[in-house]
Image (cartoon, rainbow, N blue to C red; front, side, top):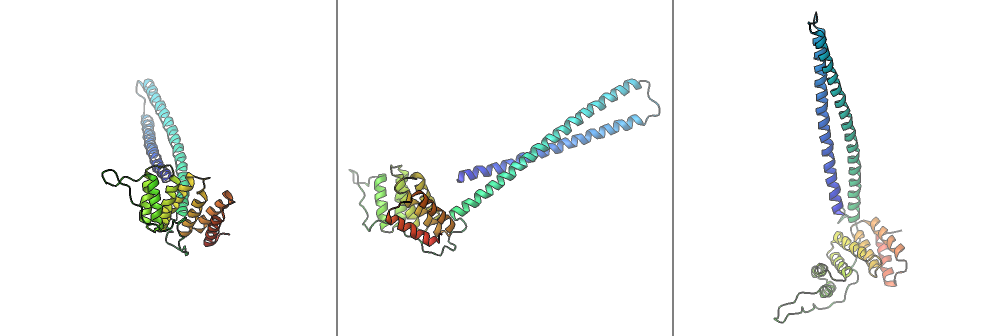
Length: 278
């Protein structure tokens, strides 16, 4: 979404430059037309001020007529070019106005959805506990190689150790493990995104937690953890003070997953109460 905004912004920067270039060309053409008109006036004044025509008046008149005709043709062509350029400028200005309106709407939607500018304001309710907390458990001992050096963690082991850290409320370690698992491109990317979102929620980084929950839902819209991701997303919006977005998310949850298990339905009901959804 940010890439789209950047492309749209570049388009907005490029469009006024094109319109400005056409405006400069139009001014130059208008100056040429004015100069040609002045030359025609000088020819007329020069021809009308003589008391008697010279001996070669017929040849001079023919030459002057051809010159005036040529100048008239040039004036006509330049005026047509000015009209064409003015039409292009009008089209570009209209396109620029529409792009600016679209960009402003997009920017407003982004700020509203992610709570930028409203984070830390009037949410009023305590932050929800991270979803699916694991029971307290001691850290797992890292595996070692034949030389005794610690072996690199596999994505699955990183997830397991991250869940253990989440249970100890060591949110920094849980976040690091989640990012390590996601970087390893393991098969269970949804679990990695959910672990990351839960860790960020524990750190009260609700804006990035919302992004992580949304990514988890996008990866598995019909999977078993999709309802959990939507509830986490709604809780993040509520913690940012965006109750409308939270209720919209919970309404989507209700329409897409009408038959939730009892524990999940209870969590959804509690989220609706915190956000004061109708």
